[in-house]
Image 1 (cartoon, rainbow, N blue to C red):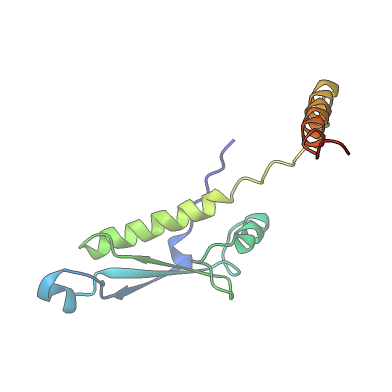
Image 2: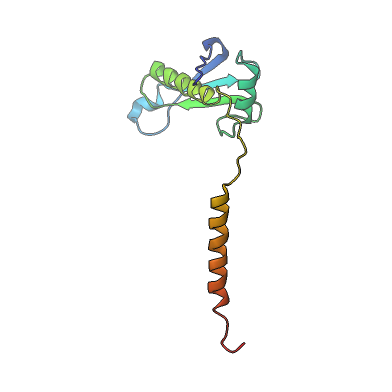
Length: 134
């Protein structure tokens, strides 16, 4: 079961910045890239989701628990804003479902026997490599 959480736009702070890269003279005049900032600690996300998000080793999450996403894929400010919000929701939804608990299992008797037989065969091959006459 995949849980889908929506991030409230009120909790997200957008800042228009100038995009990097090629674009001619227009790129120096127009601020159409977007910096999205989302504070995990003060968000309305469920507590367990916030904890898993903070545990995530993602480089977009700062030490203070703020997600920072830079979007500059499109030439339109609105499209970049929508892209940044979509990427934030993907990040949140990646930890929305709790991880499955690992159930400990034991190897079958046959697999243990096969492993030990292989080790014994290998040991005898190596033992036969010694000098003759010892």
